[in-house]
Length: 269
Image (cartoon, rainbow, N blue to C red; front, side, top):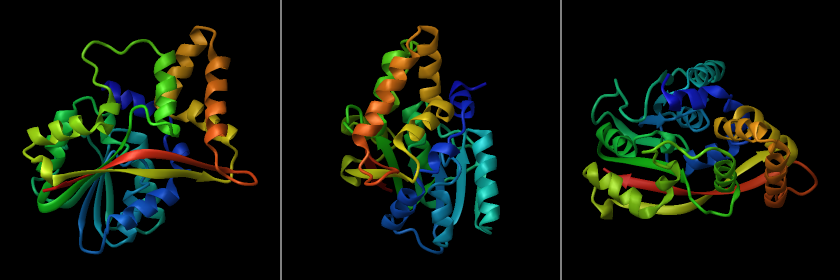
């Protein structure tokens, strides 16, 4: 199996996505998704941004490498009565089967950044976007003090070194790498804008429960727990995650309200 597919089929990202619904809806509203638009959501998971896009009236195609997430997204779309949303298995590195210049908006929010061939990702997302359309990516920022970037940093401290040739997904949050990747796809720097934006994990469950969901269902943290368990360090890893979640939680009177800053990248085709 494709290692990236194995990573995202290992857990159940939908359990994490339950904390992301409101922020996903707010992001789609900010992007001006409207009826009549053709939207491609790459690495769409179980539909955090694909469903709000369809509710706004767009004709939406979601693509994800995880077969269980594809099934979950289609089930959510069916339950919501959204016949203008279809989700299929696919790879962000080639977007096979998606025609050239076929969408007004090609977006990927915390999805395509994890694909192993970043230059191919940029090339594919530009390829499928119509002239005058947009490519939009949401990418975590390396070294950012907010939650997800710190989670991934902690994970890297507990897992074995990556294989030779591995390209960190976090480089998608660095300006020079973003510009370089889209330049090779034919996009000049002046057509690329980058803005840090804050995403919120919101739920009435506790930060401790939030960490347990990352432990049990999020592929990268599941791998970190596996490695820590083998080394007798699971308790240390878990404590670091719980301390992080509690320190970042801004909810008053219980529940979870944790900010996570990412780089919103907009490419004008």
